[in-house]
Length: 71
Image 1 (cartoon, rainbow, N blue to C red):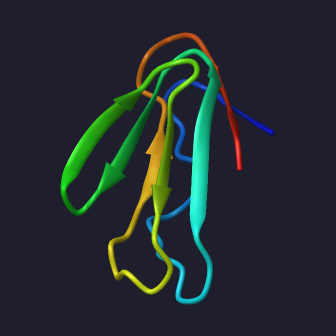
Image 2 (cartoon, helix red, strand yellow):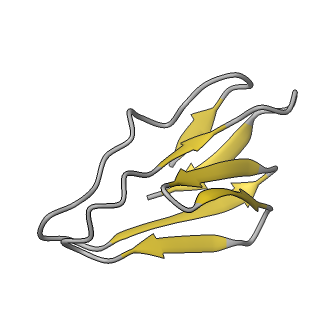
Image 3 (tube, rainbow, N blue to C red):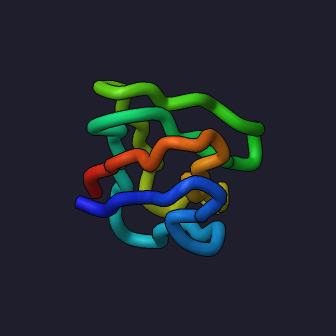
């Protein structure tokens, strides 16, 4: 798990050539950023990215309270 403080990014935008990526919001809200745009993930939500799809993604925290995510 990782605590994502307000104003921070989970990583640089990236994609995975040989593995599936799965992230979930455990507590609070984070924003998933992909080539398709932004999607709010609330506590209990999860999102995945297929291996080999060149769609850079990361999570960002833009609201005041910190969020917890699992990877």
